[in-house]
Image 1 (cartoon, rainbow, N blue to C red):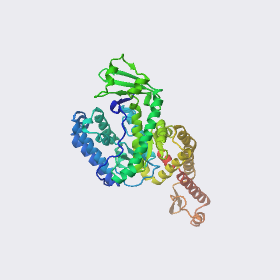
Image 2: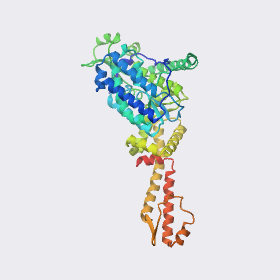
Image 3: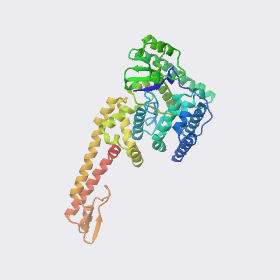
Length: 479
């Protein structure tokens, strides 16, 4: 079941440009990231007085707005752009992957999407910027703080604690969808981008509306103790779970009163759907997501990160040149063909990234190169890539390591004793000189010992060959 509010009942364009005070440099070091976390947690503790969820539920709208503003400004100070990223591995996530309420506000669905984000971020990305719920509430006035605003702030805090380990590492960051520009750059840079986005959004809105109005069934009803709501059934490609429930909050649109007089549940006609603009409940969040990603990409050099193949196709219509990744395709391929890695604690993956940074970079560049040859991140193509190209390489490494272990057990001992002395053979591959046989013979080693030394040197080289494989990082992650 999908539950959303009617906070998005009308088509809301994202803020194209907001002029704010100049911003200091962003997160540049672990020390600065820890400063952010300390500041964030202190603000939550002080404002919530021990129970932040209860405080957000019961406090006056002005106080809730002030809290959202404080948290938004903290993220703005610490997460402003500080360098040009590698667009192949720097992403701006959509609302779903950011733990937002679109397309499903049910807590379990939010957590599942957030886990998908964590999996993708830890195994692939340099950095992923998530949509900032604190900024979104801050951009409203205190008069517009409602139940949905309180819920989103609550989820934003819960998501922060879940993502905290990756925030500490600088892999997860908060996006800023407002920018500070002088009048000249507003006129020459922002306004043309804004106009271009709005034109494409208008066209996309019409196309999506025409498609959905012929595919969706929409019902109006009043739930016991839950108030009025819309139930929208339609294609799963654009409607999560195939059905969405939109609960309406005050102030209600005028047409709701006329619907209350109908025999319930009431199925709306296509004319009523169009007249009441009901499909904007589905279309507006999609376009707002893409617009936010478009702005962030234009000003910060990031690529799109989506979790829905249909949304990827829509994104292609909005901005063709921008690189786009599909976390859902990546997760499903990893889960199916490398389940041990998929189920591993992401803290262990991040530690491995730090320990094997060169191997991680090589593996990721290889994956990126494979995907770009396919030209998209479709679920079928990414799964085929893992099955046909990645998994066989992992199996080759497995075989080499198994052979190495087998030969080591059968042929060698940890030390070879020569009379009253001992020669350690724990040398790495390539360090034994080519005339090692002559050296051992000169100090009394027999033919069998020379042969054992040669076998040991050979097996070490085989292990080193396994390490040189492009997918050595993934093999290590499986262990």
